[in-house]
Each structure stands twice: as C-alpha cells, then as structure tokens.
Amino acid sequence: MRAIVAITAILACTSCGCRRPAQAVAERAAPAPPERAAETAPVSAAQTAALERIGAAGGSATLDGSGLAVEIDLASERVFANEQSVLAVLEFPRLNKLRLAVSSVSAETLARLAALENLEELLLQDAPLADESLAALLQKMPQLRRLTLRRMSRVTDAGLEAVAGCGRLEVLALIEMNQLSGAGLERIARIERLRSLDLRNCGRLASGDLARLAAMARLAELKLGGPVIDDGVLVALAGLPRLESLAIEEAEVTSACLDRLAEVEGVPARLRSLALARCFDVTDETLQAIGKFPNLETLATNNILLSGAFLEALSESDGNVPPLKTLVLANGFLADETVAHLPRLFPGLVRLDLRGNLGITDKSLEVFKQLPDLKQLQLEGTAVGRERTCRVRSQAGA
Image (tube, rainbow, N blue to C red; front, side, top):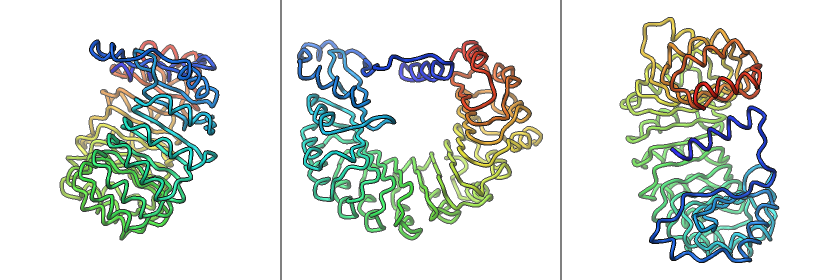
C-alpha cells in the first residue's frame, strides 16, 4: 500500500506541474528490523561516492534503514551507464534489485557483477554478454527470482540453458532477443517455478515454436508480441490452465480475437487482466466482447484505434459488464461523450488512464467525480486543463 501511495503522489505531482529535485537520486525503503539493524555497518566513504556516481549517470537507488542501497536502477530514460557507474554498484554486496542498460560497458566489467550473490531481481539491456559470460554470471546468483534480458544480441538458445538453471526463477522476460528459437523455449519450459513469461518481439520465433509453451502449466502471466502472434496462437496459449493475465503487443490478431478467446474452455472465468497495444485490427467492436469475461479486473489498451464506441454499446446492452478496477485507454480517439458512460459501467474503478485522447476536455471532470473509489487518474495529452485536473485528483483522494 505504501508503494502505491508513493506512485500516486508522483503521478499527480508530475502531471500538475510540480517539480521534483533535479538530483533526487535516493529513496528510502522501510527501516531494517531491530534484530538486523545491529548487523548493519555505517555507510562508508566509498559507498557514498558510489551513490554519487550512480546519480551522476542519471540513475537512482533505494536505500535501507542504514543508508545502504538495496535497489539500483541504471536502465531508465536519460540514464547513461558507464564503466564507473557499473563498478559503483559493486559497493553494495547486499543489493536485491539491479536494472542495467549498458551498451557501452565491457563484458569484463559486467562479469564482476557475479559478486552480487544476494540479487533477487536483475534486468540487463543491450549488454555485450555472450552465452558463456551470461552463464558464469547467473551461476553466482542463486537467489534470483526475476530476470529480464532485452536486446542482448550475443545470447542464443544455448545461453538459455543457464537461465533454466536458475532454480528460484519465477518471472522471466526475454524481449527483442532475436537469436532465440524454439530450441531455447524448450529449455525455459523446464523452469518449474516460472509463473510469468514475457516473449515480446523475439524475431526468430515462429508460431510452431510458441506452441511449445503449452507445456508450461504453471504460467499465470504471459506477454507476447510480434507479427507471428495471431488468433490461432492466442487461442492455443490462452488455454494454459492457470493463465490469468494476458498481454498482446504489435500482433496480427483480428477483430474477432476476444470472441475466440471467450470460446476456450476455462478462459472466461480465469482471465483477470488483458492488455492490447498496437494491434491495428482490434476495434471498438472487438472490445464489446469484454462482457464475456466476468472476472476481468484490468483492461489496458495503448495505441489502439478506439473511439470509445464500445463503452456506449456496453451501456446500451443488457449484457454483463466485468468488474474493472483498472482501465487504461491510452492514445486513442475517445471524447467526452463516450467517457460519460464510465461511472455506470465501471463504478469500482480505482485507476483510470486516458492519456493521449485529445477529445477529452474539462467537460469530463464531473464524470470522474462520480467514480468514488478512483485513486489514480492520468490525463496527460488530453485537452483537460492541468489546474482543474489537480483539483479533481485532490477531491478523489489521489
């Protein structure tokens, strides 16, 4: 709950014109328990200097109660991670979470990250590591639970053998990894604890390769993207017995894709989260089918050609409407007239994101006030005035 409140405050502040300090690098995590506080040593001069180097690169750190970094992010926008900032990370051997975008850092320097044996979450983007180097690194991280590899062009199917050897791994993202094929998927299918898998835009994967994922019965969350994803692939993988969350991006699915999903046994009752981005055959008519998913709590679209007519159609029909708590309809063509249906359709909304819809104006502000549980409201890129948006957020408790 504390993290949600913090995120909400940041969203409200940045949208309404507030400014954060230019060098607000470190954030405090919860204090260490009393029994552990005595074990923690004071922050050394070297660690203080390391935090300064991380901040100078545009990175950020989350500190524990003793002032030591437990999370470091060097992968966000406007970050330039160099050799010095990556070496600075090594000053914090108890680090739990690390995010690195490091195209200009040598493989030899990255190999030294093997000293971070307590890591539970790791993201590597554009890292110049080959299969053997990746394997040597992962073998030294026995606590790893979440791993993201993005645009690592030297990693092939053989490199996924080491990934499959991460015995505690629960969440795996392989994004834009264009050297991977079906043989690599066979390896990751052996990860017993894996519950979340992201395979967006891995260019060599064919539909037959993706069919191998059907053996991963533990998967609860699946993210797929690229032209190889069509209705047939979607239907085949949606049948995974524990799948609750599905995200599709830049896919060749048709306007009938949700109707076809609803026909798969067990899927309508199981699905709780659905996200669609840049799928250009998806229309307002497609989204009228969300009423067939009675437990859907999150619906997110981004860069989908929507006017919001599906909201009007749902409002006028006698069909079922899912109990949405989160609704994202970003970068579409919605207007005040369609937004007006939201309170009646989804009175339990907690988060609403309508960014990038220029047809939404100040007229919709009264509509948002009719959503009693609303905590997060994002209207950047609409025609709603900033000052009035802040006032509505304040009244909504955001």
